[in-house]
Length: 563
Ligand SMILES: Nc1ncnc2c1ncn2[C@@H]1O[C@H](COP(=O)(O)OP(=O)(O)OP(=O)(O)O)[C@@H](O)[C@H]1O
Ligand SMILES: [Mg+2]
Image (tube, rainbow, N blue to C red; front, side, top):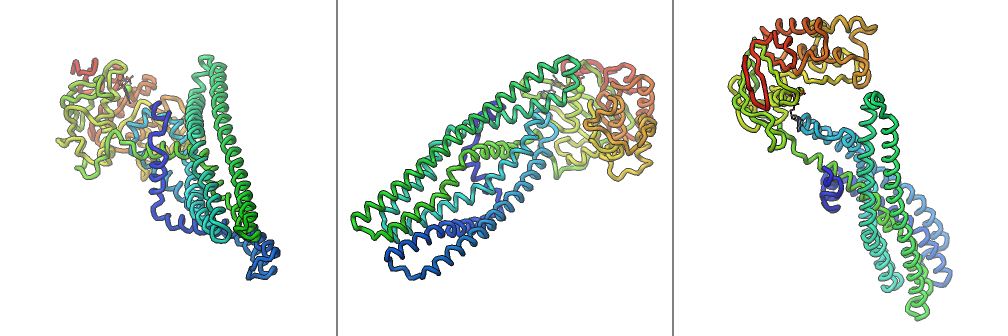
């Protein structure tokens, strides 16, 4: 993970190519942006150039335009420049923001497929950084990178040809040297250091984000352990490091831009010197020299725009690299789309083995079965793999060896959607969204009627509690469900599962946070439910196991007893 962040995994060119490929049918608008931008720059260059033409005419050069016409043209070009620039920027930003929306939805799509297995191991902070700032950074690429590069290429070639034709090929050659130096050589020379600084900055930024978010989420535990000052100090230290990285990056960028400006001035001087030399040599007339030199003076804008890119681009590449990485990441399991529908009336697990890393076995040769109408208990020490087993039954991870059969069909051949409909899990921690309780429940069944909601809540022994709240089912759950007790949250999770009405319910410690009276109510409800479905009950408590028809005991990854 760390090495991944330390350097880009793809080369800049590959990232750029992949990002351009994402343009798809917006490429036409990009061509329009380049066209308008090029015309706009030509108009911008034409203003001083027409001035030079005026001076050349005054010096006796044969110019087939009156002074009045030159003035009108100059003013016209000035106005047109504004309009064209607006059109260029409009097209660029139209493309950029359309693409950002597409990319965001692609990222959400990727997260949806990676979820839940791969997301367990990802830092939430870096995902948030990706959806927000990484994507924003890509705006720079689409709105401010592709078209400037094209415009600079077209215009520089145009100016070299124009100057060679109007004044002298020598002046054209000097201009070419200037463009290549400023637009290609200098950015290349500066890019390595700026790139390094940019990648370091992004890494610190992501790490700071993660740490800060983590601290906010765990603020209660920090305060309880009197660790506030230490954390605050750490945040300050990390923010200092981030500031230092920002400073380094800005310094590199400032150094590069100062160096570039210096070279532009040098080349302008060189062109002027060459022009004067050519006039003294009587190779060209002063009027043509003035026009040629003025054209070169005004033509560094597009290449300067490119030379300003590396600083932005390295960040863009780092962001693009991470976004492309996520889009390419293989999920732990691929969803089954064209399989058979799930039938959860009977589940048989035979010789199931699994490890997360392929080295340390978590489960070994587990065999068990559950039929409709049965409650099966699973007990075992913390960390023995009980939750892992339940996740395997939902195919969050792919099993390594053995079989998981739903009414005879192997789990790998069953449609994922259908499996999730037929099998519901209540995990150890229920996440409640910052919405009303009703909305939180309806996640399990959006079409549920009020009666169904209340029924499910009654079974989970939470109906009375919800009704005692001033706004009842319309009460908003605070962010992260902080306003509810652990037991209340757990019971709402249970109600969700009952509401869903699946054929098999997997309960991971469903009563660990409720008192014995409520446990009794929940267990009674479970027992009532079992006529219609199968239930797997994971628990530490012997009292919970009292309602189970069969209990499997897991020890060191193996089933060691069945009673
Ligand atoms: N995503 C993961 N990647 C790697 N290892 C994991 C992952 N999830 C869990 N583990 C490890 O697998 C082992 C079994 O974990 P599991 O959560 O299944 O235990 P458990 O029996 O449910 O424990 P508890 O009773 O405390 O809930 C543990 O050692 C745990 O650290
Ligand atoms: Mg567990």
